[in-house]
Structure formats: structure tokens, C-alpha cells
Amino acid sequence: MRFKNHRTQIILGFFLCVATLLPVYLPAEEAAAVDHPRLEEYLILNEQEERLAEYADDKAMLNLKLYQLDLINESRRRAGVGPVELDILACRTANRMAREAAAEGFMGHWNTRGEKPYHRWAFAGGRDHVMENAAARWSSAPLPGGPEAIETYMREAHIAFMNELPPNDGHRQNCVDPLHTHVGLGVALQGQEFRYYEEFLDRYLDFAEAPSRAAVSEEFILHVRPLEEAYNIYALVAFYEDYPRPMTVQMINRRGSYPDYTDSRVLALWPWDLQPMRDQESRWSAIPLNFTRPGLYYVHIYLTRGELPRSGSVSTRGKIQASGYVVEVK
Image (cartoon, rainbow, N blue to C red; front, side, top):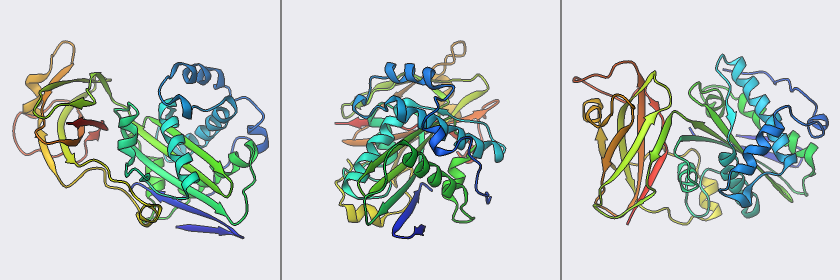
């Protein structure tokens, strides 16, 4: 979808009802100048996070992102769903993607290394399920910069997401998905190119051990438990894929939404398979895994509320996809 404004274009990309133009809490020039009430809290979190330090936000950008978070949560409130929290590591993975996209002139959900959103999140150390929105603005002349301009571009991108009409409203659905708990925001402005990414996370699991690498046929243990007692682990499904292959800018720009799985399912564990692996007192599950082919394995863990079935037909339909865990097997 494209929105044209004189010689500037905005292009949206998405992972996968109608909203009017949303009010904003502060004009862009004020939001850029006034410290957000939660800024000090997030500055501490920003300082504590050591991963991807080269993509960390400075104080001014973090302040803008907190006001953008307010806008996102207003969208969610209007849709009748709960708020999300800003995630520092997800902001950094989104920043990296936005900077690469602006510098290299592409727009989409793959980077030039051929990595999809769940690859980038997992390679940075993330384990949650992630769903991405992406937007681009480009112009025949250098775009105005500075905090006020960036604040405006961010808000316009999110408002465009929310103004989508069914059935082409993938961005909006992602923004107001009731299962999301956190979001990372990525921003880059380089000359004529502006990129904006929203990385929505579903954080429902605590991982005590989740190796990122294993040898072929080596058994390793995935230690995991739901963060809330209301949830139980319902299923684990693993998909095989080869290593990402480099992509050209033209290849990326031709692609739209990305698949959150592959065509090669190699493992499925259901409630009766998983129950013996769970310690009833601690609620930790110790799940033994081993894979026999070199490559990447994308592991989906599904949660459900209430008691688990001991037999009968099963499906992941309607369950919470709670992980974005990727393990590399060599």
C-alpha cells in the first residue's frame, strides 16, 4: 500500500476495524522537548541491557519512543485490549533492521542476509514470539531531520497502520492483537530514506536453559515454564530450515508478508507427550530435544489455559504461540 504526498512516498509492509485518525497526547515539537514520565525508568533498563549495544537508543530517541508507545497503547485501548510495554532489546533489533533498510534502500521483512524477523530476534538472544510491522518513507530530496520530524514520521506510520481497511489490515491486526505483551520500535533516517519497525512480542515463558547451538544428534534439554500459573504448555512444534541465504534489495522489495514457519515440520509434541516432562511443584518442563540434520530449527511452544487433555484430537488452533526459539545445529 502506498500513500503519496507530493514527491514523498510512504510504503507499508506487514506480517501477515477501521480506525479514525488518532489523537496524540502532545504535538511533535512538545513530545520532542518534554521528558516522558517513564523516561528515567527506561534509561536504567537501557543502561542494564548489554546486548546489541551499538544499536542502543540515546536519551532523546528513547523519549520519543515512549511517547510512541503511548500512541500504540491508545490504539490498543480503543480496540478493547491491554497495553504493551517497551522492550529494550527488541528496540535494538528493530533499530538494526531500520538502519540497514535505510542505508541499503530496501523495504520489507527480510534483510540482505536473508534473515526474517524471528531469525533476527533469536540471534540477538530473544526467545519470545515476534510479529513485525514495517513502514518506509522516501523522497526525491533529503527528508527533514531532527526529533520533531522523526516524531512526526513515527506517528504517521502508526496512524497509517491503524487506518487500514479489512481485509488488507494486517498491520492493524498486529497492533491490536490481544496476546501481545511488549513491543520494540526501530527508527532510522538517512538522507532521503526513513524506516520504521514495530516488533510485537508475546512474552509468556521463562527459559532457564535454551541453547542456541547444538551438534548433530546431540541431545540437549530445553528448560521452560509459563510465567503465569493460569497457563500450561500444550504443544511443541519444531520446523527445519536451511541457513538464510543472501538477498538483493530487489528480491526483498518484491516480497510482502513472511511465513512464520517452514514447510518442513520435524517434531510435534502434544499434551500427553509433555506432561511427563513437567515437574508439578516447580512447573518447569525439561524437554529433551535432538536434531539429526545441520541447519536451523524454529521451535514453537504453545500454551493453553486450564487442564490439559490426555487423549483425543488436538490442534494448535486457538492456542498461544509463546516462543520464537531458534537453535542452530551443526
